[in-house]
Length: 283
Ligand code: SAM
Image (cartoon, rainbow, N blue to C red):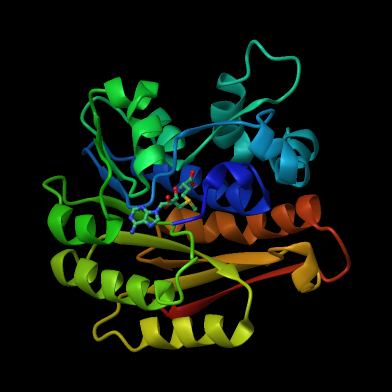
């Protein structure tokens, strides 16, 4: 396990992922009933963008720093940007970035619940020692394999909510692991909302992933949303990413029509930037 999210925190992929995550949570809040979130690959929660590792890649400069400047007035990004601003109230410039469990914790009401997993031993310790470790509605299972948690934690008593699957994709089996996790998860919780983030590195692998998920029997409605910030050039690192979202909240589907162009315009690095969305399984 070599992947450490600190090298990538706040990059374009985090902005894409966390903005849509925040929108989904806002929609879950619209009903009085409690909701549940399982974050299978939690990371360390809080990221110092001025720390050595983050400075070395400076990926946040082209991600959250740019987005916070150019989309500061975007109404659909207000709650997401607020959770970023909250961490930086005492800073002259943006320094701390919230990971997915921290963002989710911002949206928990009294009876909502978050379970977070992290497998990397050191990162698991770091995560447990953050304020999330003392949050009454947050349970941190770490070190713990997030795919096992899909089997063990579903279906949740709340009967509504989200599973965020955000692996590092450093293993060649990761796409297959995700497909099995979805299969297991849906067997247990057919009405659950499952958001899988994935990197776009190799179009053939992405197509195979879509095909394999599409072949799952009884797959409920599933939306694919993708953002490419530049022309594919391996020397420059990750150029695109996507969400494969089973049972996406209706509001997220609507919002994505507006937000994908906004993300693309704000985060584009060359003329190859583009976005698209399509139903893998329609309504
Ligand atoms: N979701 C986080 C966020 O948005 O802030 C970022 C997660 S990062 C992309 C992936 C994380 O998954 C890493 O911290 C890695 O150590 C962890 N990880 C890798 N394999 C795992 C597994 N099988 N179960 C749980 N965590 C795992």
